[in-house]
Amino acid sequence: MSIELKKDIPRIIGKYSSGKKGPLLFVTGGIHGNEPSGVKALITVFEELERIKPEIDGTIVGVSGNKKALNQNKRYIDEDLNRTWTEDNVKKESPDSHEEREMFEIINVLKEQSEGDFTKRYFLDCHTTSSASLPYISVQEVNDNDEWAHKFPTYIIRGFSDIITGDIDHYLSRIGMTGFVFEAGQHTDKTSQENHEGVIWLALKEACNFDLTKISTYPECVDSFAKKNAPEQKTFEIIYRHGLEDSDIFEMEPGYENFQKIKKGELLAKQNGNDVVSEWDAYIFMPLYQSQGNDGFFVVKAV
Image (cartoon, rainbow, N blue to C red):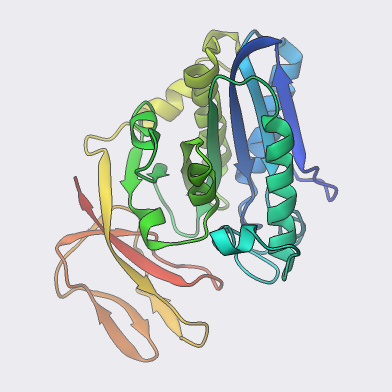
């Protein structure tokens, strides 16, 4: 069931442990303010955990992202929070934008929550997409991220963090954590929150030895997620990013969805009055159908 966000969204949405030693599972939602699905899913998950009080190994912590942008249902205030996590930015003594302030707050929460004798540190960053999409994982091929990602029954995209710098999963991987980004579907699709809940429960099972049968909505919350998200072709790699400048006038051709096949010579978009034509027989990924953003689209190939 979808819920409405309150104006006073807490930074720490929830924290749960049954007192057993184990890993830290650090889950973030709403890094983009027009993507509230992950925050709503976390609220629902923590309400259920507090109700049933199950045994888990370690601790799960849920954290909200761009709180001010979430309240305004805007992607960001000054700049994209998912582009601020560069090595230079995190070394600054003081923030230069609203998003950098939020970034430092999240970093401080992570440092505080990481104190303790954890066996491992996992992360899960919850997002949604501007266009209709099947759910997928975006994973950076460092640490044991890729191996971890393949425990989850959904499409997997490699290489996003190799093209885009400053995203939160790049930072979390850089400090030695294991994890990935999960894109649950279109921003306002009611199934996106369900998909986020499903992947969080599965992460609790894989990371913290959680018994999924304890959930009141089991097996629907996990089975429906797994059944509709277990594709024949599972792994893709990004081969091209079509980047945009702030001054560009860009419009995708209508009707594109993630993982849709495209052919060489196919008209994909208009940019500043000029045709943008495919140079590949491949698949389109993350076509831009919103007013904010500097990624027009990506092209991916099946691995």
